[in-house]
Amino acid sequence: MKIYNTESKQKEEFVPIEEGKVRMYVCGPTVYNLIHIGNARPMIVFDTVRRYFEYKGYQVNYVSNFTDVDDKIIKKALEEGVDASVISERYIAECKKDMQGMNVKPATTHPQATQEIDGMIAMISTLIEKGFAYVAADGTVYFRTRKFDYYGKLSHKNLDDLRSGFRNLQVSGEEQKEDPLDFVLWKPKKDGEPYWESPWCQGRPGWHIECSVMSKRYLGDQIDIHAGGEDLIFPHHENEIAQSEAANGKEFTHYWMHNAFLNIDNRKMSKSLGNFFTVRDISEKYDLQVLRFFMLSAHYRSPLNFSDELMKAAESGLNRIITAAGNLKDKAAKAENTELSDVEKELLSQADTYRAKFEEVMEDDFNTADAIAAVFDLVRFINTEIADGKSHSGAFLNKLYAELSTLTDVLGIIIEKEEEILAEDIEKLIEERQAARKNKDFARADAIRNELLEKGIILEDTREGVKWKKA
Ligand code: AMP
Ligand code: ZN
Image (tube, protein in one colour):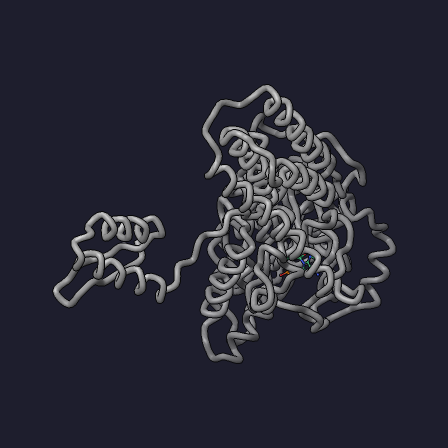
């Protein structure tokens, strides 16, 4: 399996630290608002990477944080007159709803910055002891970048250029830094802000330290994959490397993966530019499965431009797959359950070539665009085999269905729609059942009860009549 590593700028063969296991950390959102579909891109992309590893039999320990202390959260809390935690807890819950809608699996652990302050204080203390950090007069703790020899190895930036750039951009507090590239590990509180006690001052952590600490706590000093959007390469990930490697004395991450931006009119979609749609906005117009399918229709390292036309194209592509799956299932239910014939065995080995193609392109740095093309090839094959006039055994049709659902499951695409039963349909069936009982047609009455049970509806005969509830 080959992964493009931002650090080496090359595709590299994936070799896990521990056989059969993947330790993966994905930087998550700052929770002060509903997530926008730009934020959804890394969620969907790296969930698919995870699913592929799982499909290959790896056990994936997947950690993704929520940044729940930040200027924007504090600002919103002050505006609403509530505690910052009220804001962050609200938007964590909303984010989880969106993730579920997009069929993004919950991480093995979703740590939150505010619950990891002790670990941050411990790592900052280690950095100070080792001479990699210093405390300024006002209690701010800075990372001493010039002491870390490899600073810039991920972003391939020229440090002298960066330094002079930073010097022209001086903001308050900069004058107490030893070097313009030094960054904050801990900062003093301001009035009305949440704060924690520390050996240096009452205050709160800088942003970068949380990921180094959570990654160490839940995955160990060294991890296989660290991922996020490409805007995180510098300074966030560069700073994480500096902190983790200086504190732990080991190489931090083996493979750095970064998704390109989701753009709108060829500009990055972002809250600050105001050119965004939230996942919730999109859910009012489309099934979120369509959003997922749209995101996977491009390679994760290519910029992707959002448009209604592309979403419509994704919708019709997805429907083609779902329709084929539905027809296949119907045909399988009606088919005779005979053994596979030799011709069918031959046909199944042909279907296997689509899976082989799917794997080949996924193993070439997770080329989901080509993987979708392989799924369409399989769909075309299925449509030919279930066309009118063709007859196949149930065994054959069920195997084809399993093949399709295995591949779509790797992409996180759900092909089986849960049948929704409407309240009025339930009421009608209940009336029919009452009539059947009056006519002493108990077989029909029982059949109706069972039919409803299969759809997850439980009937209760009470003194006030028949009542129903969802199982
Ligand atoms: P943030 O809440 O801004 O820290 O972003 C959370 C994640 O979303 C990070 O991995 C960002 O890189 C990613 N992200 C933000 N905007 C976009 C975008 N327009 N396209 C792709 N990824 C993005
Ligand atoms: Zn991070």
